[in-house]
Image (cartoon, helix red, strand yellow):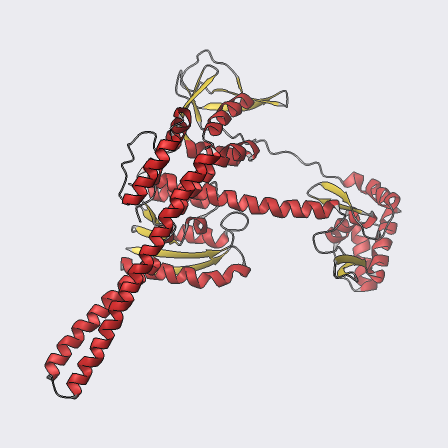
Length: 515
C-alpha cells in the first residue's frame, strides 16, 4: 500500500517544526511497512494560497491503487472544513480509495469508520478553526487599536518611509524628494490636461522611476496623502504629515469620475442553512431568498410536486437552533469536576508511561551488561565461539525488541483525553460561537451537531448527534453530579466504556481510546 506522508507548516517562520513532523511520520510509515513518499508543504492549512496541497490532492486522486494519506495531527490536515481539498479527500475516503491517518491524534479514518471517529475528526477541525479564529481576532483587535490611534500597520506608500522615532517607536516620515514628485503628480492631473500615461512617462524620463499608468492611478486615489488611511474600505485619520491637501485630492477625484468602473455584486448569495433542511411534506430541500432587500426567508423548492407551503424567516430558524446550543453549556462546578477527573487520569497515565520507560531502560542496561560478560567469557575461553555467537544473537534481538518497544512508547499519543477536554470546551462555548460566527461557521457547527433537519410548517425539527444529545439529556435531568463520580470510577478502573449507556459523562469518554 502506498502512503503519502504530509508534513505541513503555515509560514517559513514555522519551518523548524517540520523535522519533528517528518520524524513521526516516517516512523509511523515504517511501522506500517508501507512504501511511502514524504512531502513538506509550507502553506496555510486554514486560509490563503494552497497550490502545493492542491497539486498533491490531484496526484493522490490519480493514483489507481488504494493509498494512505498521513498527517501528524488534524490541524496539519486543515483548519477550514469548507475547503475544496478537504471535500475532495473526504469524497475519496467515502469511495474507499484512500484512508486518512492522524497518528499523533490516534485517529484513523476510512470508508467504514464509525460515527464516533468521524465526530472526532469534525470536532478536531472545528476546534482548530476556533483557535485560529481566536488568534486572528486578537491580531485584528490589536491592529484596530493601532488604526484608531492613527498608526499605519503596513509598508509606507511612495513619498514616505518606515522609520522609528527617538523613543524607538515605529513611525512614518516624509521623503522630501519623493513627496515633491507625488505633489507634482496630483497638481498635473488636477488640471485635466495630463493623462495617467503622460504623468507616468514624465516620471520615467525626469526621475528614472519604473512606473506605469496603474501605479499613478493607485497613488492619486490613495487618501493617505491628505491625512487619512483606508483599510478594508474604512477610513481612519493618521498621525503623519500629509503631502497634499484634501481640496487638491478632491479635485483629482472629480477629474477621474468619468473613468469610474461600476462594480456589480455577485448574485450567488450565501445562506447558512442552504442544503441542510428538508421539507416534511415532500422531502425536497428548503431554499432561501431575500425579500425587500432585507429579510431572508426559506421555503420548499417543491421540485417533486406542488403543495401548500409557508415562508419561514431565517432569523427565527437561527434563534431556534441557538436554543439547542445554549442547552449544551455545562454548569461551571460540574465542568471543573470533570476536568479534575481528566487531570487525575492524565497524571496516572503519565506516571505509568514513565514507569514503563524506566523498566525498558533497566532491561536494556542489564542486557548490555550481559553482552559485556559474554564477550569476556569468550575472550577467557570459558565458552565456545558457537555458544557465544548464538547467545550474542539472542541478546541483540532482545535489545532490538526493547528499543522498538521504547520507541513505541515515545511515539504513543499522550493527548487522547485532550480531545475529550476540547469537546467539553467546545460544548460550553458553542452557543457564543454560533451567535457571533460567519455564515460558513454557523453552517459547520450545525452540520457537526445536528442531523435530519426537517421543516414542518413553521416548526423546525431535528436530531442531535452523539454525544451532544447525551449532554443535553444530562443538563435536563440535572444528573451531572452522580455522573462525575461515575466518570471518576471508570477512570480508576481504566476500562473501556459502553457508548450505549444513556446520559453519562463517562459515555463521552468513549470517543477516545483507553490509555
